[in-house]
Every structure is written in structure tokens, then in C-alpha cells.
Image 1 (cartoon, protein in one colour):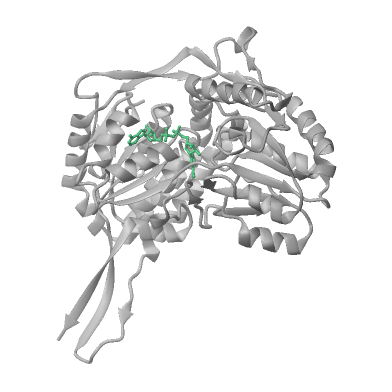
Image 2 (cartoon, rainbow, N blue to C red):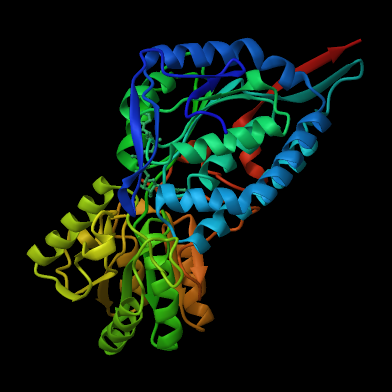
Length: 482
Ligand code: NAD
């Protein structure tokens, strides 16, 4: 078992000033997972220097070498998935079933990008006789990978794997809420044979270490998933010649049309809203429904929400874990207070659970608000917790207008068999992911994923699928003259 340290230059290091921060179980704060290095600019400097000195042989390695290492990482991840999932539940709080689903998917993700290492290609261009013009695809250099806590394995793996497949070096800063998952991923990659000098792992709090990392001119690209305010700060901090990919928050809506089966609609909504304790970037946080169906749908969602068993994700029968941190719990409770203050009707939930064995965790009941005023902040701002706001609409035009009435544009879904309505919804909704008769959550590994507006910076939107490789590579045009 490796200690909880930073990793660079082929070795595990404490932070250079010796500082640490604590990682605790959100289901029971008394359970200390470990103390991790609280890194700062000098640690960033050492880690970047180490990768800068070592990444080039990896770029020059045969594509097969890179593909084989990622394939091996997939096999190791597959073998360790259940053990890592148990630690993921302890560290982030999601249920064991949710953690296993996330951990097991990482192997497929590594395999996908093992294939991309082999598929990288350039083109030749029509040219004069005596000359040949071609494009040469090369890695960018050193990629800074900055990730959130909600999917600490998959958000990181879908950046690390393509970055390494392309031959880049990486400096990886996992969320300070889930540092252990960052360490586990790095261990898998190192055990798979990724050369030690090519990877650096830096733990620490974002405003300190993240800031130092993104502003460093040796970093060729920054790939970030997290909140809009932090993404905006990163965009402002990176140099003009550093490429920057930002994948940020969402305010995702499910629209239920007149013809929908209400039981089916409620099931879709409850899965999208309360799965992962509402802490998915694509989580459903608004439900739009015609006035005639409103009360019946509210009743069904409330009944399903009340059937959810909240508790530590390790306990059998628990279907919703805690919020991932005290700060996250307090944020969710403050939005619940706001919903009340705005005059919304709290249909169910709205309370913290802190009795008995839940006393030391960050548990909140699944919450449903109805009859909020149109101006409500609960209908526009990302809450990132198990809180859903209902809203009535008049017709499809009105529904599409309301879906688009937020600064975000990540995911939206519609429940209907009306193909004409689906076609309009898919074309007119300002979101990067459109779902039909399915929850707003969940996405295919091999399809593009990315948001519009505040959900993504448009320069480098693709976060999954093969197009991602464009971010991690650059093209050089070569003129061969006889
Ligand atoms: P966050 O923005 O607070 O932190 C994300 C990462 O950025 C962390 O590693 C953090 O330490 C780091 N960071 C913080 N300040 C920084 C700075 N000044 N410079 C550089 N790095 C800094 O987000 P979070 O609370 O960890 O995650 C939740 C957010 O992530 C939500 O908004 C959610 O919607 C979003 N998210 C988006 C997607 C997506 O694919 N669109 C997926 C998952 C999560």
C-alpha cells in the first residue's frame, strides 16, 4: 500500500513544506481516511519539472507500447474494481452499487483509448510533383488534469487515458474531497507500465495548487471538470498559448408531455434527480409538466422519493448515500431554505438526517419543491444535490423556452412518444446532451459529451469519444521536397 503522498520523478513525496489536509468519510466524519499533502506552488514546480524532463521518450514510444500499457491498465482496473469501489463509497459516499458501476467502467474507458493510441493519424494533401505535404499528429506536451469529486474515477480516467494514449506527460490534481481515488488511478497506471516520469500526482486544495498549476508556462494544456466559477478562474489564469478545456455545471430539465406514462416519467425523473445523491453534472434538477398532469406527477415523484432509503452507502438496502462533504451538505440545505423563503411548496424532504447512526454524516432527504415563483433561483442555479423543482408549462414552445431559461446547457430530457415534439426538442434546446424517454444522467463512453453556454468552454468541448484526441494532440504540417 503506497502512502498518501504526491508522486513525481518516479517516487512518492510529502508536500515540500510538510503540510497536510484530512480526507474523511462523508457518511461518518469520525472515520479518517488519511492525511494527504497540502501542496503549493513549490510542489507544482517540482512535479512539472519532473514531467518536463521525462515525457518525451513516452511520446516517441511506439503507439503499440502506449496501447499495450493502457490495455494492461484496463485489466488491472478490472481486477481491482470492487476493492476500489469499496474505497470510493467510503471516500465520496455514493452507494456501493453506484461505486461499482463507476469503477467497473474505468476498464472500458482505458480500453477505448488504448485503441485511440493506435488510430492516431495525419493526412497528406494534394501538392506539386517533387513535393509532399502532410500533417503529423503529435502530443501537446504536459497536460494538467484537474478533476471534481463527484465521479473521481471516471472524470479523471477520461482525461488521463487519452492524454497518455497520445503520448503526453500528465500532472494530475484530483479533488481534495477524493484524493484517495486519484492515488488509486495513478497506482493502476504505474502498475500497468506507464513510465514513472511521465505521470505526476499533486494533492491539495484547488485555489492553492490548482492555481499554481494552470498558470505555469510549461503546461501545454489544461483539462478541467468542475464548477463554472472555478472554470472561469482557470480560463482567466491560463496563458494564451495553453489550450484549455473546461467542462462545468448544469441545470438540467426533464420535460413531461401530455401523452407520457406518468409512472414511467416519475421513475426516469427520480433516477436522474436522486441517483448519486443528486451530485451528477447531468442530474435532473427541474421538472417541467403541463398543468393538467402537475399534481399527479408530483404525487408519484414524492412517493418514489419517500421510498428511498438514505444512509451509509455500504449498508445493504440503502439507495441514497450522503452528500460528499460538509460544505456540499450546507450548500444544499441553504438552497432548501431559499426555496422556502421564496414561497415554494416543500412537497417532501427538505430535512437533514442526523439521528442515530446518521449523526456524523452529511445526509439530506430527497427533496421536491413545487409552486416556486418563476423568478426562483432554484429553477436556474446549480444546486448539485437531491433537490428537484417542478414547474408548469403551457405548450411545447413554452417548455423549450423554460428549459433554455438558465445560463447552463448540459443535458435535457423529454418523456413522450410524440416524434414531432422530440424533433423540435432535439433541435431547439440549448444543451449538449438530449435524452428521449431516459434520465438526463448517463452517457456513452464512445459518444461525444459536452455542454453549451456556462456548461463548457466551446473551444474544446468534446469530453468523451474519439474526438477527444484532438484536444490531446496537435498537428504539424510537414513539406517534403525532393
Ligand atoms: P470545483 O470547481 O469546486 O473543483 C473542481 C476542481 O478544481 C477540484 O480539483 C478543485 O480543487 C480545483 N480547483 C478549485 N479552485 C481552483 C483554482 N482556482 N484553480 C485551479 N483548480 C481549482 O468543483 P467540484 O465541487 O469538485 O465539483 C462539482 C462541480 O463539477 C459541479 O459544478 C458539477 O456540475 C461539475 N461537474 C461537471 C461535469 C461535466 O462533465 N460537465 C462532471 C462532473 C462534475
